[in-house]
Length: 228
Length: 279
Image (cartoon, rainbow over all chains, first blue to last red):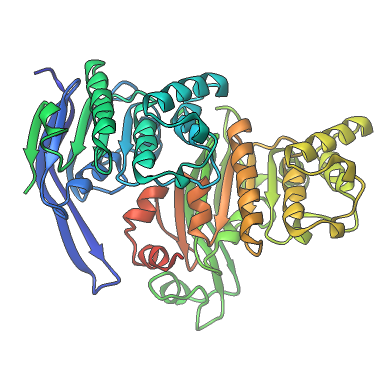
């Protein structure tokens, strides 16, 4: 196995709920895992166990309570994501780390094409080039051209999920974090998504997914890790 | 890109009143008060630190009286701080401490490098001047002297802010609330400032009008990569525009972080209350 792109050591995440008597809950305790370029690690476990919390700690939507998350960055070298400056995290999100959440949260007045292209605009790509790439992705994701100028919030759940996935893949990050990527997808679309994941892997992207889909997505993962 | 800061605020403080030895102990987020119960001094902003990187939008949230606008007014050089520094630099050049500028220098700096948009248009606009007059006022103070160029720049800004350029000679009271905000934005952008300060700009507007103003700002931010400091009590507004956010309460910054982290994993009790109170 090559040098890991991401290495998590003794990760803990607690939440202090100040509005409920300051009580503390700790969904993530002493997690250690690593993933190398081109690998797909699937995290499996019961709902509510904290699988998504691990992804959000890596993406820094959650602040890790303790432990380290070492990432081998092109821009910054080996860096601990749990302590990196916000500007560093924002730059990594633009160029190296993609995240697909379980639900699409976007502005209702922005077209599907622009929503999909946003990560490319953020990288400074000109609109025409970005939209050309965006249209290719929309086609690959099976979104009808009639919908490209509509807001994805008017789409069905499965179509929204495809836009959400497209946003994570389009910037070709080195690390992709996918939260239930195949939930709410029909069998044919699921196969498209699995093919996308395999193509990204072949290009050297490391993938961590959280999923219950052991038979479908799990069959294509390099490794499975049961979080209990 | 990472250390490409244009504004750095260090330990910036402002109080109004005589102060007493117990002031600091009796005020602040832990006490829930900004005003000292002994001497009546209001501690509007206490030892604020922040950094703005070129091209980013930083949100400042907090309830009324938390010190957001005081902080903004000090950065706009309209209010002199009691202590602290406001460092500014252009394109990685040598930093200048804006708190040391004299009145003339501060006015020139404000009119060339800064733009501001207020919640109430009458604060940002001279209501008796036409749109053209308002933009010209800002440009004249920024030492523009060519009438034709000022007029052409105004027309260009009206198109940019989605205002009909044929209304260049109309006075502000003849415009709707949303249009007035766009006139303010046009005036604020007139001298191509490095930093745009936005103070509760969508409060009091209808939802659809709010959306249009926010969309306009988002487009301007995309196109011009202008740095913005966005003050709002509305987390929804901040979520739409800012990728980093600071939270203020009783004159103090109680939390700072990535906007998604502030919203999904707020650390401070007050931030948790603020997030849980969002509609």
